[in-house]
Image (cartoon, rainbow, N blue to C red):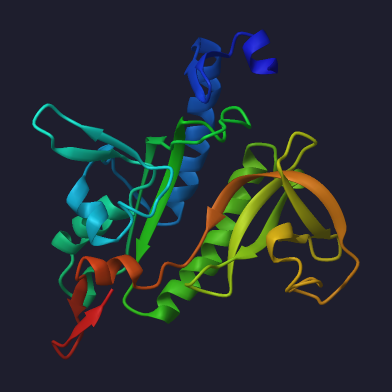
Amino acid sequence: QLLIRAGYIDKLAAGVYTYLPLGLRVLKKIEQIIREEMNAAGGQELFMPSFHPKELWEKTGRWNTMTDLYKVSDSSGREVALGPTHEEVVTPLVGALVSSYRDLPVYVYQFQNKFRMELRAKSGLLRGREFMMKDFYSFHRDEKDLADYYEKMKGVYAKVFERIGLGELTYLTFASGGSFSKYSHEFQTVTPAGEDTIFICDKCRMAINKEIKAEQPACPECGSDKLREERAIEVGNIFELKTKYSNAFGLSYKDEDGKPQPI
């Protein structure tokens, strides 16, 4: 509401916004800070299409299971998805370029419009039907290399939020890891307008998302049960996908002995 009143953005429809000249200047400055930190972490910037062939999403099983996927048909009946995320595009792309252990690890990222069919578009710019996202994908030869890089990226994201002025209000938050790992990690910024509830450990500046609080009642870092409840909004998320998408697209590399290994 404040950005609209100040002339930074204009609301075209629910969850769809125009960035006016002032808003675009701010967006580009934030984008450049993120770009600098992703490049410093070894990331290579690319730009992938928003238009995704149906068969890519069928390979991963998400064509029929992702409930907020926009599906579009052309006059010949050919169906495509409007990309809400890019695992289905980046994985076969990297598979075509990587063949040897010498080619790994690979880190790529982009700034891209995403499309998600939110039934109730809320939270303004962050939870819209069309929105800008920086998505970063890393490809590794084994779980240790993945785990080491995952730990590094926690610090990379923290530095981004610090540089844009949200460092004091943003907490690394333990969230459900789904079928891949015990936890994933969100970055949650405390604000009365937030739609998430987090429980903050002031001793080590960690937090727990309400969704995992029942199974993790104390701080996973220090064990303290003195947790402060706050409203917050998710501004970033990192997670380990293991070999889910690599397996779907048959990604492998040859190790030092010439044997194929999953990426």
